[in-house]
Image: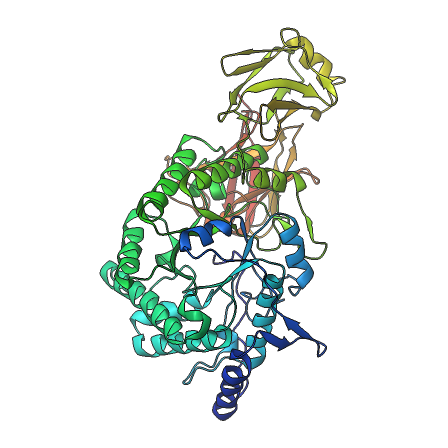
Length: 588
């Protein structure tokens, strides 16, 4: 994954040509013959993996399920802690193994630690650190996937215009990696390159270049001998994209290599509008569901069904969860996505690796899950299905008389059993009813649950099914949000907002002539946290400088804020030079 953070500047190089050659020699001679290495403090760490790797590649990759990514760490630029995560520790891998993971992908960016001219030497100290981390993981009986990560867009992407130099550097990199790890156990896998792209090239040229990188990687590793002769090698599509044409290209490459120890890899981050909340993608709807179903069917039919294992090297949502920003994706909709991923992967026979950048799932400082309930849902999908519903909230308007409210149950092959409020089992026929897949809460029960009717969540119910996890349903009291007039500048503008229990879903922006307003011109529904963002604690909606500076000067933009209750609130904003004026629009 190309991380959403801005990459740091490339640091200056260290050793000269002669020193680099000596380092390379030390690496090849000193590290290739043993799995031991000097760790920090002078102690020795030894890989003590006791995992018996199945002979068949298909069985071995199946044994790697589930998998996890050490994202934004050894792939950070320029150094391991540059993107906000602490250094990896053996305790981290012990935690992951105890939580049920069977493999880890360790992305590595080598660019800041490799000379940019021949012989393209990798710093011996950096190789040693990578090896230390890999050996820690294997010592905890985890499979490991090692790759070449952000190098893909930093310099490998220029191969179409600087072919010989880029290929020579890539080949030199894999020559050194292969020498360093040639005697590691077969629990270590090599992955050719992460999400490669090629600048200034035609589609045909890109296909050729992708094949060239994968086959050159394969040739170098196999020729290095030792454990690399039968090591599982992971080959990717362009960009890690699971489109049919690119997977067909990869299948052609793998077939031509006549090697039973090859693995195909792609990535999946859901239907794009849903994954980042743009273009109205606020729900895990039929379009998002079909996108996932089709992607996993393609993985199975192109590879798994033909005897080639698939390692889904990264999956998740592009903008959720993010501990540093307001949540773009509604929680229940995200849970539906993860539930679907786990089911589709099991049906397709695909091993999945969760992309974790450090600010999403596992807190690397405490080694605790940032959202234990979310992780429980992910973990549950490894073995079973869970029932869900059309939404995880029931909104009850404070300004209106309470009436019955309904949701649609998504049974997902389970049976609905009961509805609970805390330790109290609700009475069917009195508190709620179920007809076909329609769950209806009675007005009487909602009156009890909402109590004094304070804004926000008044009660949380659990719909329990015959297997899997219960589906939580929040009962929310709300009224139509109130937006107020405001002034500011393109660099700083907020809309005073009384949310009154409601939750912001998306923002629509247009001009009077019907054209779209904002930096995303192909849709009126702008991107959450990029064009706008809710600030619930301070009672505002933030319009970002990027959005405001993209507006036509002096021309009012009509905004419609959509809330998860279904309420829509209109607002008008006008940028005039260095000032911005916002006006609430009264409903007629």
